[in-house]
Structure formats: C-alpha cells, structure tokens
Length: 76
Image 1 (cartoon, rainbow, N blue to C red):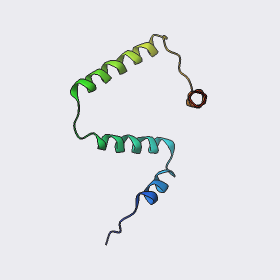
Image 2 (tube, one colour; image 1 turned 135 degrees about the vertical axis):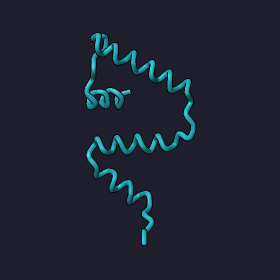
Image 3 (cartoon, rainbow, N blue to C red; image 1 turned 30 degrees about the horizontal axis):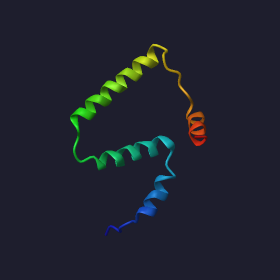
Image 4 (cartoon, rainbow, N blue to C red; image 1 turned 90 degrees about the vertical axis):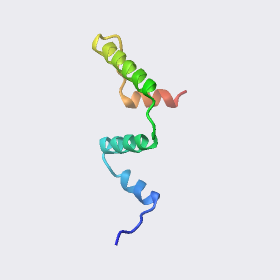
C-alpha cells in the first residue's frame, strides 16, 4: 500500500539532493506547469539562446560566477 507524502516532506528530501539534481528537478516541476506551449515564445527563446551563445563564443560576453551574481543581486 502506497502512503501519501505531503509537500513539506518531499521538499525536505529534495533539498538534500546535490545542486545539479535540484536544478533538474526544479526545471521538471516548472515544465509541468506549462500545459500549452507558445510556439512563438519558444522560437523567440531559441533565437535569444543562439545569440547569447554566439556572444560567448565571440568573446563579447563576460561570465560572472553565480556567487558574484547573487551578491550583486542582493545589493540591489
């Protein structure tokens, strides 16, 4: 017999996962909220992602470590 677990217990277990697994889980949960895909939005994101990758490859963008980005955001 399966027992129902509440969201707090599931969250507690999820927070024990390594960062990469938590990120994958978060992405899956967010994806599950999108019942319908907006093809125009998907195409726009594909274009934007391609542009950002070109900027990285061409050296027009400087990467910032997450810890630094988080610090900057918290100062806003």
